[in-house]
Length: 83
Image 1 (cartoon, helix red, strand yellow):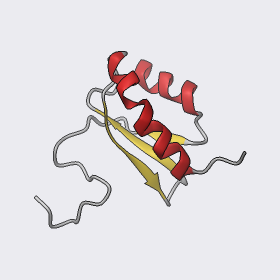
Image 2 (image 1 turned 180 degrees about the horizontal axis):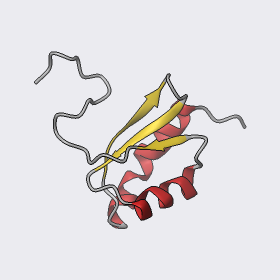
Image 3 (image 1 turned 180 degrees about the vertical axis):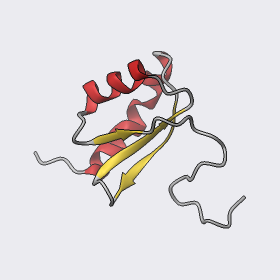
């Protein structure tokens, strides 16, 4: 079966509670056309958290943002003028 970034985005949404239980808070995730990967933003990104996600999903499929998620970070579906 061929996976797509949309399929992976759905899988990550389903997996998010499990990551939370492991202490990895996924705050935002969604596909990006620029890299054809799913970009994941974490509340407190660390090298260990990023590595756990890369091990689970593959470096070819995800990009973990090195910057911590803030409430002002862009969220999929949010318009630039939204507060």
